[in-house]
Image 1: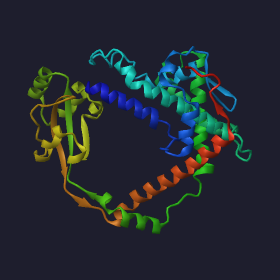
Image 2: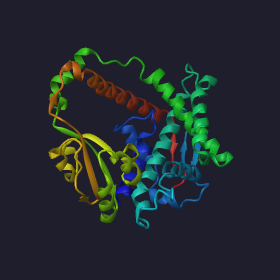
Image 3: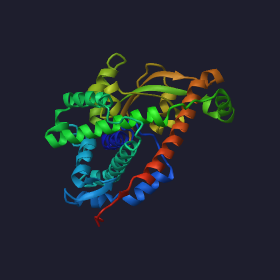
Image 4: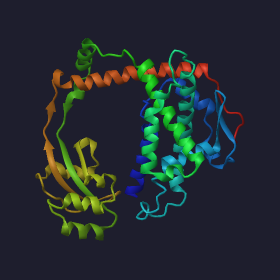
Length: 338
């Protein structure tokens, strides 16, 4: 179950954060877009493949388009080998991922909407061949790393369009939307004065952990593990996602960790815990480092503050752009699915 929960979270993170060009939005345009044009997730699972789900400025997205992107996003979860240790969940996994399907539709609509809108800017050469250099290189690398991503001509075409639309949107945002954004020093100082608590760090720890599905497995590994082989055994046996990094986690404060890890704050560097049981499995923990309480100065915090404020400015610009795009490009659902 530990691995299922983490796998679902990883897929959601990929789906929502994998669009490099996209940043978090909470504006009215996003809410309006989802309310008027995104069908119910259950209906999306049962519509015929050629059903037009949404029309974005004349470009019709079909159920097949949605299904293809959904398969692309969830491909890792569909890997039978990786799911071998996971108990049979029946329909529960699909139920957990139902909101993801709707989010994928919203992301597709948004991508198509913004791409259509930037094409209206006649002073920006969206169709210049040089605009496609990065996405074509990305397509080549994707196909080399994962040939199954484009098993057919149709799939390859969808993948090319997806990569190139995202790439060109990124370029447009850099050239037109985010150009000229800066964070003046007075804004940095003001933020520091008003958010000093953010720059006070409590005591934190860095750990490695090995998570096993059964107590028997945990006892076997605990008898083998040492400081010297902990990382290798974590990579080989742990069912947690951070296994690929040798089970490394942190640094984390006590409040940020599940209670099962609190004992790490009382361990010595290099010490290995007994077996710890949690709802996620059986844990073996080694303390890597302990960081004492600290407080950042303005000079130390300046880079972090600038990044925070710049991100906020970008979010505001992005929302404005999305509002304008939604007003200028028609988005509709031609035929209700339910």
